[in-house]
Structures are given as C-alpha cells and as structure tokens.
Image (cartoon, rainbow, N blue to C red; front, side):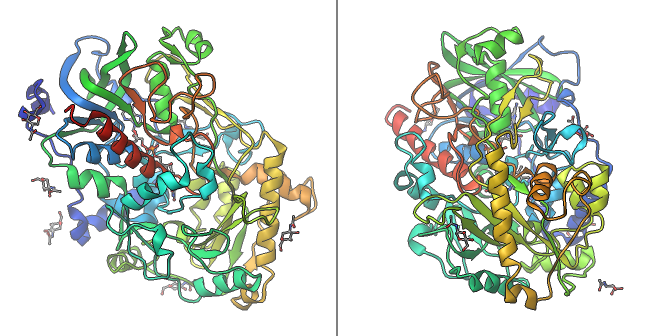
Length: 617
Ligand SMILES: Cc1cc2nc3c(=O)[nH]c(=O)nc-3n(C[C@H](O)[C@H](O)[C@H](O)COP(=O)(O)OP(=O)(O)OC[C@H]3O[C@@H](n4cnc5c(N)ncnc54)[C@H](O)[C@@H]3O)c2cc1C
Ligand SMILES: *[C@@H]1O[C@H](CO)[C@@H](O)[C@H](O)[C@H]1NC(C)=O
Ligand SMILES: *[C@@H]1O[C@H](CO)[C@@H](O)[C@H](O)[C@H]1NC(C)=O
Ligand SMILES: *[C@@H]1O[C@H](CO)[C@@H](O)[C@H](O)[C@H]1NC(C)=O
Ligand SMILES: *[C@@H]1O[C@H](CO)[C@@H](O)[C@H](O)[C@H]1NC(C)=O
Ligand SMILES: *[C@@H]1O[C@H](CO)[C@@H](O)[C@H](O)[C@H]1NC(C)=O
Ligand SMILES: *[C@@H]1O[C@H](CO)[C@@H](O)[C@H](O)[C@H]1NC(C)=O
C-alpha cells in the first residue's frame, strides 16, 4: 500500500493504477471450495464490529492529510449505483475516482446461494436497528439485524438477486421526469434478458450489461406450487411485464451460474480504463464544501487521511444508510440534528427523514414429504458450476405473486408473496435473520432438506422511520430507527397477506405434494392468544417480521427543501457540484425489490450528466 501512496500525483492520467483482485479463482475448484468452506465456518463466530474504528488504525486522524489528486468526478461508494456510475461516466473522457469503504468483492459473492453467510462477514456493515417499540420482538433489545454490503458492488454483491421492478404507478409518485414511461428505457438499458421461459419481450432489454435469468425449477416442487396458485385463478405471467397480478417464477440477476452484481457487470469490465481509479478500503468521512460548492472529499485508508478534489462533481452513492450519515457529517441535514452534535450547518435539509423500508413476515414454514438436495458441499458446488440448484439461487427462491387487497388490479399491490423452496429454511435460518437465542434455537428444528417458507412482504408501509447520527465522530455507526409497525394498519395489511397464503395452502395441488404447515412454538404469543387466531397472528407479526433490506427516502427527491433533499436531477438543493445517486433518493416505496430501480436511476443520471457536460469536457 505504501507503493500506492508514493505514486499519488495530481494528474490522473499519469497514475499507475492499482487493481483490486478480480474473480480469478472461480475457475479453480479447490480454491473456491476452500473459500466457501471458510465463509460458512466463520459465520457462527464472526464478531461484527461495533463501529468504524478499523479505518482509523493510527493516530494520524485529522492531521497530516495527503493529497489524492484531482478528478472530474468523485463517486463515494462503489456499490450498486456507484458501480453503474463508475462505468458510464468513464465512457466519456472524464477521470473518475471511485471510493469504496469495503474490500473488493470475494469470489464467494458470485454464488447467490451463499448470500445469507455474507451478511455476517467482513463484507457487510452488520448494522442493527435501534431498539424498536412495535417490532423486532424476537431480537435482543428489540434490535433487528441490518446487514448491508460493504465491498465493490455494495448490496448487489450480497443481496438475494431478485429482479422485480415494481408497478408502473409507483414511478408516478416520483419527481417529474421519472414516470414509468421515462424510466423504462433505463431498465432495459441495464438488462440482458436470457430467459428460457415466456416473457413480455417489449418490457425487457437484451443488450445491457446485467444478465437476468430464471434458475432451473426444483423437480417435484416448482410446477406443483405454480399449480396451487392457478387453482385459485391466478394466471402465469411475467411480473416485470404488462401486469404483475399473477404467479411467476422469480427472475434473478444471474449470468449462467454467476451473480450479476454491479461489480461483475459494470465495475470489472471498466476496471482497466485509464480514466477510472478505484480505491477500496477507503472510508469517506466528509464532503468538503466551500461557498456552497462541493470541492472534494476527505477519506481515510489504512489509517492515513487523504483529500481528493473534484473539478466537476462529488456524487454520493453510499446507500440509504450511509449517504445520510456522510451528508450530515458534512453539514447538510436537519438543523436540529446537526446542532445537537455541534456540526456546523451548511444547509438545512431533511436528510435521514422519510425513511421507509419493506418488511416481511417470517412465520410461515412448510414441510414437504420430499428430500431435496441431500448433497455434500462439494457436490453442491459441482452442481453450481453446471448452473444448478441449490447454490444457483438465494434462499431457494421459486415464485412471486402480488396482491391488491381491494382486488383492484388497476392499482398497485399492497402485498408481495415470495415462495421459497429448500434449502431456504435450514437450521441456520434464525441466525441469518439475527433473532435472539430463544428464537434461533426454535428455528434450529427446521430441516433444510425438506422445509421451505413463504414470505409475506409489506410493500407500502405507513410507518416511517429515520436515520440519525450517534455523534459527530465518523467512527460511530449511524442510528437506524426503522420505526417498524408503528402504524397498526401495517400489521393488518401483513395479516391480510397471511390470509391469502393460507388460502393457497388449502388447495388440492398444495396438499397433493404432501406439504404440511409447521406449527413452531411462538413464545410471547402462545401464552397470550389461541394459536392461529387473529390476535395470535398480530402478535407473531410483531415478533418475527424483519427487514427485506430495502431502505429508501433518506435523501428523497422533490421540489421543496422542506420535504426533499435533492431535485429531479438528484442535485442537492442549494449546493453546487453535489448529487446523491442511490436508493436514498427514492421518495416513496416501490411494489418490488430495490436493486433494479437503483441501477435504473444510476443509468438515467449518467445520461443526464453526459448531456449536461457535453461539449464542455
Ligand atoms: C441482504 C440483502 C438482500 C437484498 N435482496 C435484494 C433482492 O433480492 N433484490 C433486490 O432488488 N434488492 C435486494 N436488496 C436491496 C438492494 O440490494 C439495495 O437496495 C441496493 O443494492 C442499494 O443500492 P445502493 O447503491 O443504494 O447502496 P449500496 O449497494 O449499499 O452501495 C453503497 C456502497 O457505499 C459504500 N459506502 C458506504 N459508506 C461509505 C463511506 N463512508 N465511504 C466509502 N464508501 C462507503 C458501501 O460499502 C457500499 O459498497 C437486498 C439488500 C440486502 C442488504
Ligand atoms: C488451484 O489452486 C490451488 C491452491 O492455490 C493450486 O495448488 C492449484 O495448482 C490450482 N489449480 C489450478 C488448475 O490452477
Ligand atoms: C447487534 O445486536 C447483536 C445482538 O444483540 C449484538 O451481538 C451486536 O453486537 C450488535 N451489533 C452492533 C453493531 O451493535
Ligand atoms: C482526454 O482528457 C485528457 C485530460 O483532460 C486530455 O489530455 C486528452 O487530450 C483528452 N483526450 C481526448 C481524446 O479527448
Ligand atoms: C484488467 O487487467 C488485469 C491485470 O492485467 C487483468 O487480469 C484483467 O483481466 C483486466 N480486466 C479486463 C476487464 O480486461
Ligand atoms: C441424506 O443422505 C445421507 C447419506 O447418503 C443419508 O444418511 C441421510 O439419511 C439422508 N438424509 C435424508 C433426510 O434423507
Ligand atoms: C378479494 O379476493 C379474495 C380472494 O378471492 C377474497 O377473499 C376477498 O374477500 C376479496 N376482497 C375484496 C375486498 O373484495
């Protein structure tokens, strides 16, 4: 690393670029096998850091800054959106510095089936929510576990890989210029559809960098499950197409067997461009703002503090939890919050407010009379090379369906139901979810070879939370108050969703495959309410529901400084040369999953930036 520091010079085009490792050992079975084994073994004992101290490893902090040079654009965060920007902006003759706090993505991140393990590893921030009043009852201190990607590709390198854009009407609630008609071309631009099933072709892209595919069916399960929904009148369809009201196989970020993260699809193909400089293990502590213009950033790497200058723009892409932290540490945020921590106020904006997240109810487990994938790890990995389950899909995901509780299919849905298959609900499940010992032990009775689960996901929560600072010290983790289920209506909606699932499980097709609902103990609810009564479900929902990891809104887009942080071009109100481009700008939740909309918005902003500076290179 010393080498890297010595070669720092101001002219980007003279830099000798340091390359993070790329996924080389995927072709070496024994090497990959060892890495997978290590990831799984370390899972139980890994101690999640309690703050960011690892970055401040010497006493240099706030002294002795070194100049890291001048770039046209500095992108903070090499995650989902940051990866897209790094690639698209370096298509032009602009120099870009991509600053990522985490390490390069590991080889194991290529395997979707391992995603749960990555949440408890050096490749995740491993946050918790603050103590919740109305939810997270099955976790210690009522703090839900809150993993986030901390590596190149960000969350796209450890998420479930599900590709679900949401309902067209979701986008009508965004700022002007973001209607579904406006954004559809950018969904297509990023996509390379490689389906073996029928899709609505006019809604898909075929030449983009990110492969989307449908994992193979699970023999003796997938088709039967589809039939149980059909028995209730559902039509089989492409939920990313004309309508999402039907039953569908999940579409997944998958290039044959490999996870198609933005690291894989956008960063790696651009990594050797001479105008892209990637620095990993580099934690941004501050945006440097003078006379209402973002001039550059301060970051720390291996205990050394650096400053870098942006001649055009600083773009914040640190995600919906860390972007608000960086903005507030830099003096952009609610006056009250900044004063509380004695941070000089540069601009009063509702940073961290309007937080929304999706939750799912994790209390519906089923046991089949089949045994699926009774294989050694080695056998599983060999199948993975052949694009086969179980490791080719995260959490055994199979099917997805949407419900509008008024049965009004012209409106957006309230509920998404996700059907997983084995090995979704194995004995590790409780630990992956971050439940406390009591509940983790209950979930140890799940059998990964026979059991699966059905998730009920709340799409449009009425409860809103916020992200605030613990202190002005960048080493402290931000505080994530999700405020889950504060509004009773959210519990009702999830309960209605559970009722829809119970209808499906009464179908002949479901019974024919010998599936039984598991009756697991629910301490906290069993004592108070009769099992499976409305009150019991309400109680279980507050215990077991947890995040689907979809935070938004903490730097939302809009017109007014009162209720938004960025304008429709994602420029921070009142500050020049500063944009936020990531899931924090999404102003209202979508009826789907967040990766695709995040990639879409980074694609669209890249074009907006190219137009803005064209002829002005
Ligand atoms: C476990 C999990 C499962 C999910 N499953 C799905 C799914 O199946 N389908 C789906 O569509 N969505 C899913 N999501 C959500 C989706 O992945 C995210 O919403 C999306 O990736 C967010 O992208 P982003 O660019 O906003 O942030 P991120 O991808 O989180 O990128 C932010 C990056 O900034 C870096 N960073 C943060 N702070 C700093 C700093 N101070 N200095 C430098 N760098 C910094 C981070 O390390 C990270 O790499 C899941 C998320 C998680 C966590
Ligand atoms: C695979 O990696 C192992 C361990 O690093 C090494 O000994 C072996 O030679 C490699 N095999 C191939 C085919 O490259
Ligand atoms: C999150 O909560 C768990 C369980 O109480 C605890 O072990 C862990 O240290 C907490 N993590 C952080 C970052 O505080
Ligand atoms: C690209 O930009 C560099 C640095 O500004 C400049 O020296 C070079 O001439 C430009 N190249 C082209 C092809 O425009
Ligand atoms: C970038 O360069 C490295 C080192 O030479 C090489 O291993 C890698 O394959 C290159 N990447 C691309 C996308 O060409
Ligand atoms: C899984 O396979 C092992 C070894 O073949 C066997 O002993 C075990 O009974 C099988 N498990 C189940 C649930 O069938
Ligand atoms: C919608 O349809 C479901 C399932 O067919 C039914 O149980 C429910 O009562 C209907 N709801 C309304 C509001 O019509």
